[in-house]
Length: 390
View 1: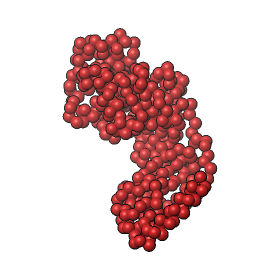
View 2: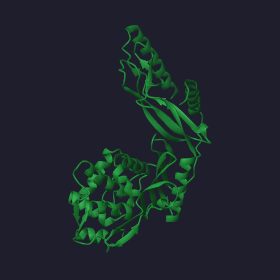
View 3: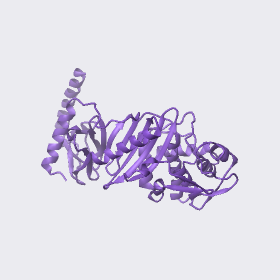
View 4: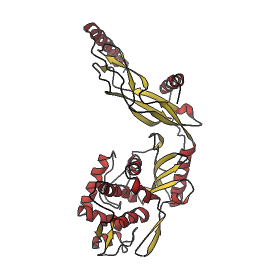
């Protein structure tokens, strides 16, 4: 934990740096067209490159397919022993005759849900996805609507799904930011099912298939999660590692080959583990800073977070870290203790790395008429200066 003096010095330096020219060079270079890397405990964004560009999801859509399934099991609507019927459509579109990734489920047979989950996760089975979609929602179209609705509910900002497999379809897209958000959600909300993403192999219909994720065969603490490929956007991957007490999630796309995908993902995750150190900035309840108040009995208000604040900073580029309290102000009085009034934003280089909501640490009542009149004059002057300078 920083001492009070070190915290004050840290924020003074950060605010000075905020006013200086931003250096645009990234701390890390990758061949990926899009990439996003997050440390799970603090939510620190360690690397970001075009994270909000839309791409076709390919098999990465199956992460969302599984979220819908896991949520149904958690809520008691499904159980792992439930059996699902293999329709002719599922068999032809994603089964042995389709020429796509399959678990070789036999037509008109019934498959337990637990086997379907392993088929989808380990073998990237398109037939498994369609079997589940039809069994849960009557059709892939209906199931895809559930996927999109769940995506919005769990915080995915810009993802739309048209089918359960990720096979090419107009109007379906994801982003690297959304895929990392989804992967972190799966680990946090469904730990009993998350284990399947690191399963090395699965056998169904007497056919053994290895997990397609290349990270699992590297000695880097990999936990999965999914690979994908489309002609439009190239090779993609969502990966996670848990090593040295840290868990990182990454998503990458726009790579030219399977080999390049594996190497770039390994490099990014290795760098994320080794190139950052954790800094504890504030305990729960500690004051983070002050914001201005308009028309109150006092001119400033102390703010704090709901919990502790910790970040990961670059070990060799610590001067690239900068922070600022951002709020719409001055805050009009009255203000109740606990009201959300701003955000602490931290940047690593030109990447917005962390955002923490800040709340009033005290209540501020309305001031008397002279105080309010004086504040009003001051705000008018400030507003005039802003207009004059713009």
